[in-house]
Each structure stands twice: as structure tokens, then as C-alpha cells.
Length: 381
Image (cartoon, rainbow, N blue to C red):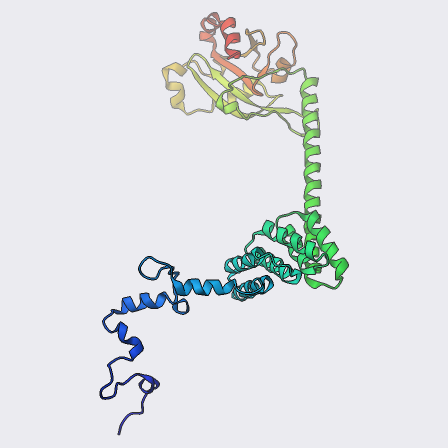
């Protein structure tokens, strides 16, 4: 029993006695490889899988050129309409970039049919909207509205594009105009609602920012006045130490000028060339309280020969004066009592307290080496 013939077997060429092995139209391919055959087929527009503009010998592909010329045969409106239709096919397939190319070719024809040109601008605007080329979309919609001032599609697409680039006032204006033409247009209504909501959010953010700015300015005014009322002097260095580059003075209660001022403190040990840094010290703090904080050290610190005199009772505290000298500070005196005195004037440097701590056994020698002129010259660096 013979098996039934497949469709291929029914259709394939079977030579009869005396006939060639291949149909006459395929005899030229008898000695060619499958690769060469595919190259030949690719030069035929219908079979192309990639652009081949040659005839295989470096010349023009006559078949392709003939096909291209057909695209520009006919009246301008027919040519532009043809490009529009091809663009529409690609738009339906979501090939937006290719669709834009066809719509652009249609517009380049410059036909005098307003209905075709309007469709080309509107369709290209739709593609640019999908491609997130919002500014190009807006330009196409503007040109569409020149042709038809009552184009609701142009209003919608440009309004949406304006919204997506946060040009909310322009979005609202064109969408309002669109609703004046078609008050029941749902896409325009929905987009306008989004615009209105976004405008409200922007307004709230703006008001909050303005409020915060006013509060910041008020707090800064209170702080400045609090410093002035205390007669504190603040000197700024041209090149402050890295720790103090962003040092700030603040009020314990930033809306109450009578609350305690808080500032950083540099505690310097000039006889050992060491220092401590306290991020926040209150103006009512005493040197003794500062020392009790910074001298919380392991026993090994005090066993070091250079720290043998660093027991708190042996330490003396000094502040630098505006004139470049030194003033000794009682360890139980609040810092602000010294800072508020007009003579001798002891400043804060770069918004921070600068407290020198020296063992009393070494203070006389250290003071004798203090050079006012060198100190003042250093401040100018």
C-alpha cells in the first residue's frame, strides 16, 4: 500500500523523459551554491531581508530603483497619500520611527491637499508622542492647527506633550481651547485633570518652599540679633581648618534669642602639639566642664611622659584676644562671660571657641614664646 502524497510531492518539479533536471527558469542556478542563490534573491525587492543597492557587480540594483521610482509616480497628493498610508501601516505595527520617516516623506512632497498634510502632521505628532519626542510633537501640532484651527487631535496631543515636559500653563491653555471645540472629549478632559492636579501640587510645593525660606530668614535674623546682643565677635579665616569649614553657631531654641548659643570648640594643647574637637559646646559651659569631658582618657594617656602634668587641677585655660594676645580664663567661669566682655575682646574663630590648655608648670615658658605679631599675621593668610 503506497503512502499518500504530501502537498510538497504534489507540487515539486519531476522531470519527464527528455526534460531537463530543473525547470528552464531555474537552469541558471544549477551550478550555484545555496549562499549564492540567496544573495541573488536578496537583490529582488520582494525577497529582500537586507538592503542591497547593487546588481552584484557594483552597479545600481535596477529592480530596487524601479520600485523606488514607483513611489513618486502620480500627482503630488497621490504620492503624499501613499506615504501617509505606508506610515499608517507602520504606526499600527508600533514601528513609530519608520512611520515618522514615511510621514516626513509625505510632507516633503509639499502637496496642496490640506486634508493630507493635516493627517501627516497629526500622525507624525502621534508617533513623536509615543517616542517621547515631546517638543517635535508640539511643533507638528502647531503646524496642524495652522491648517485646521479646530483640530481637537492637535489640541490633545500638544496638550499632553506640554504636560509631559512640565509646561503646565501652556498645557492647560491648549486643552481648554480643545474643550471649547469639543466639550465632551474624554482624553482631553482626563489630561486636563492631570494638568490641574499637577499645577496644584506645584503651587503647594512653591508655597511650602517660600514658607520654609521665610522661616529660615527669620531664624537667621534671630540668631544674628542674639549674637549682637551678647556683643560676641566672630573672626573668619580665609583658610579655616578642615574641621571648621562648615562650623555653625545655633540657638538651643532657634526662635528664642535668649536661649543658649551652641557652637563647636577647638581645645588646643600647644605644649604637646595636640588638640581635641567638640562639635557642640553651650555658651554657659565652663572650661572646667570642657576639661572634664576631654580628659576622660585611659590611664595610659597620663602615663605618657608628655602628659604627666595633664591632671585637671594642673591645667590652665587661655583665650586668644582680638589684638593677638592671650587672656587667662577661670575654669569655673561660663564661657559667655569672657566672650561678652568688650575689653579685652576675645572672639570666636570661624564660629568656634578656641581654647588653649596648658599645664601650669609649663605655662610661663609657653606664654613667653607667644608672638602677637606672628599670630595677627597668620590670621591674614
